[in-house]
Image (tube, rainbow, N blue to C red; front, side, top):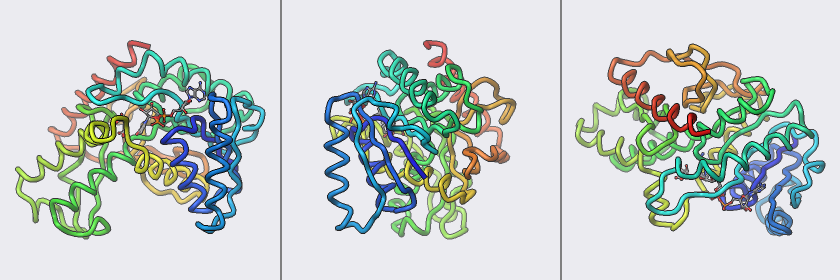
Length: 306
Ligand SMILES: NC(=O)c1ccc[n+]([C@@H]2O[C@H](COP(=O)([O-])OP(=O)(O)OC[C@H]3O[C@@H](n4cnc5c(N)ncnc54)[C@H](O)[C@@H]3O)[C@@H](O)[C@H]2O)c1
Ligand SMILES: O=C(O)C[C@H](O)C(=O)O
């Protein structure tokens, strides 16, 4: 399994590190436009191999896409992150051009690859890759829901004062401060609905904290987060590499599912060796359906800026 990660910045390097530590890929190529940057990150990471016990070979490349040839999975993290006070949507002006060029370069050398889009505004960037390349829809996957769900579980465990491993929950909808939909109704603590333990008011606090999870970290860090984003991507790459058929909420091109068309939006999908192997249809109640409509409206408005 050869994985290319474009953008050797905070998220790209974190993603490469987690993939290597899990030791399921033979090779990770890190590519960046900044001269020597990816080479430096790759060398630094390789010097952790004997300490962390992995055999994955990580190489760094400055903008030479021939070295990415025949990648099974390509991850796009290139582009600018937001600063405190900004929305993800404000990044579209710079990131759209980067994502379009990078995806076309990747496909030239790896025509059969699966692409995971991370750069923000992610749902619109995933849509852009659909519109500007000829890859089939199962091979273009936006990463947002896996991260948002991890943050949801963190907030739930905090409210429950219990271990995160006891908690399950999912966030669907657009990957934005206002558009994401933590499904509190379906979240569980060891199989029991969380509403058995938490008041409606406390659950609403969990929901709101989850939605602004990225903004909260951006304010604290001065730039957006990278550890959990890198871990979320690596979990998705692992599901594809190991053909696990695990369910992740991902931004997928919808053609009628959930009543939407011509949009990439976060929905539960089965990930396996073919990328998105199935879009899982869950029954939403009327309130959740209305929130999903609002979320889609927000994503469409950003898509219209392309
Ligand atoms: N979808 C998500 O859940 C999620 C999570 C975290 C970050 N992000 C997004 O990921 C992107 C990267 O964030 P970061 O914190 O790693 O930023 P960063 O600035 O640390 O890294 C970005 C890297 O991209 C490189 N780059 C820029 N243009 C390039 C090009 N044309 N080709 C190759 N490399 C290029 C830069 O040199 C830089 O090293 C941002 O857009 C951020 O908003 C998304
Ligand atoms: O918040 C951001 O801008 C980055 C990313 O989308 C995140 O959720 O961490």
